[in-house]
Image 1: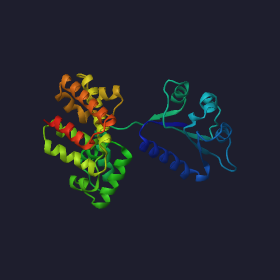
Image 2: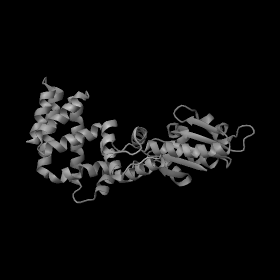
Image 3: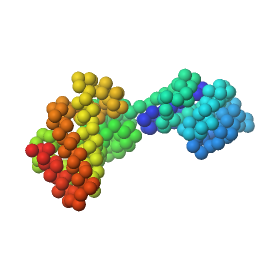
Image 4: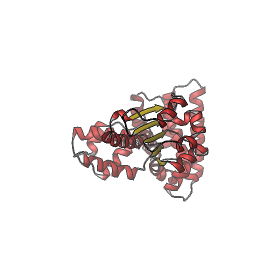
Length: 306
């Protein structure tokens, strides 16, 4: 069997690889597993690994990481796959794959192809709750959503944060989430903009100062604001399309679109254009003029809150 694992969900790829390799090692042994990096290995050793069994072993598992980086391998992929004996199982891991190339088409049609993508917040919340239960803890669906809002949708990070929370206290609450986790920069900047748009100047300044205390530079904050404005513009351009449709077409996680959806629809197109122009001028000023960056950013944010 030949399995291909690809996609932007690194956590799930590793989980699936561990599942496949552990099952194989349990049935045979760890000496029957060979790992090769396509960026470093020559085509000769790769071909040899895919053709020959070690002495006294009846089966072998070959794990190839990014073999497409070996030009000879990617060009001869169909021939290579067709010549692999049944006694050798293969897992191909591709961190990034060009779907326009023949290499992708061959893997898609001739291997067990699994594209593991980032999950939306609802699916992740269910997964977090189930993971907590399996570990002997408790995490309600609402608390799971709160954790995702705070740290983001990176599944590996969420898994690590969940384990930390469960060690501290089996029943996870919003209080322990606030105590033990740090909000992601993107989440903090979203809160900053959301607060500014709501007209709360005092809280806007408090959130900005919080970022500065964490040594996030004004230019970094401006860059993240620019990204948030890009998302708002994308949602606005989507018109009445659904969150999932906008996310799919723009290649964004549905969680990111859902979180910004209300803000986008509370802004008129003219207001959003004006805001983007002001942000552009602010960004240029920060990069090209000798000014107090903190004062300039505070003035910009307060203008949003007025």
